[in-house]
Amino acid sequence: MATSDVKLLGAWPSPFALRVHIALNIKSIDYECLEENLLAKSQLLLQSNPVHKKIPVLIHHDKPICESLAIVQYIDEAWSSAPSILPSDPYDRAVARFWAAYIDDKWFPWLNGVANAQGAEAKKAALDQVREGLVVLEEAFGKCSKGKDFFSGDRIGYVDIALGCFLRWVYVAEKRNDVKLLVEDKMPGLAAWANKFCEDGAVKDVMPDKDELLEFANMILEARAKLNASSNN
Amino acid sequence: MASGAMQEEQVKLLGIWVSPFVKRVEWALKFKGVEYEYVEEDLINKSSLLLTSNPVHQKVPVLLHNGNPIVESLVIIEYIDENWKQNPMLPQDPHERAKARFWANFIEQKITEATRTALLTEGEQQEKAVKELKEAMEVLEGEAAAKLNDKTLFFGGKNGLGYVDIVLGWICNWVEVIEEVGGFKVLDPQKQPHIHKWMANFVEVPLIKPTLLPKEKMVVYFQMVRQAVLGLAAKK
Image (cartoon, rainbow over all chains, first blue to last red):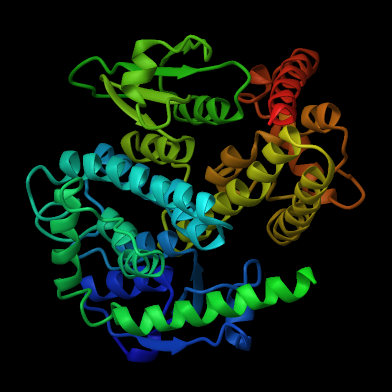
């Protein structure tokens, strides 16, 4: 497959773009990575995703695909040879989609909410909610993995990708707030899973560096705080 | 009809009559010709079946297939499509499937969510939701204008109804009702001619028509919901 056939418009800090990187790596697909500057979006991005103007966008044979989980499913279906990302049984697929939806619709907004929480009480409540969500996901991990390393079993799959992409951002939230979110004694399954996920061949070269991401997060969150402060005056 | 089944398929749908999420699942089941048992739930006194089938969200719809629960309306609809192969709802081509999923996601994030917020809030919060809803309808109108014409009445394309139609269909019955209850206006046949044409065609589809709900009954229900939520909000 020619490299230019597959392009990923992404941004290195984005967990959603990371999902696509991992899916492409699982399938050993050659692709061209185009780093977007989210303050000065490229024409290609604006044309490829006119509705949301967001990354990630996968461009395959000049056709754009948007929304990270739709892209991951597309990759699984367009390159249908093994290894597969979603299971083959319809019920198992439904369970995987359920947990991906929980992560995107409930848990990630809670994680995102930590940065937006104003004041110590609100911050603590936001962090508690993230932890409660992880407890739910710990139980899910137990049921889905059936004693194996990943939600999908022996190799990483859909739910692993959906959750694993946020691990560096969990680290950022932990460091910025001086707390532990992925608490080993409360979530032993997830703690072990997190290490294995980050070490996986499809993940380790594309996962952003912890400290670089922390520096990036500090920079944008402080800039945002200054902006809010000045607009409140 | 489900054919060649080795055992009798047991399909049960837990729902409430007035939920657009439940209605979608019913449309999907009818579209496939799957026979099912419908169970009306009482959301104030949730059944143990509902609570054990959907412990995480404790909501309807829940589809029980041979005792196995599937929850979240979009997840259920894809399950129905993949488990019963006749009358596909999603297109075969992976790129077309991705586009269908994109639009289903857009509808859910931008239209369904904004409508819910507009129903349950007032003042500035409601104004913001109504504005978002109008913008989303504009985007959808653009897509409808691009995709639909006299020969292609539905987003499912040449095959008639498809996944996106079934996901979007709730707007035909519910938006007008919620507009009345919430005291705002978003639907505008002048600004959204293609969406309105689509709605007029959707409600005439033989499997859809008998499922439409009486508007007055829905207004009473949603008025009650709105008052309850705003009452709670006022106490805080």
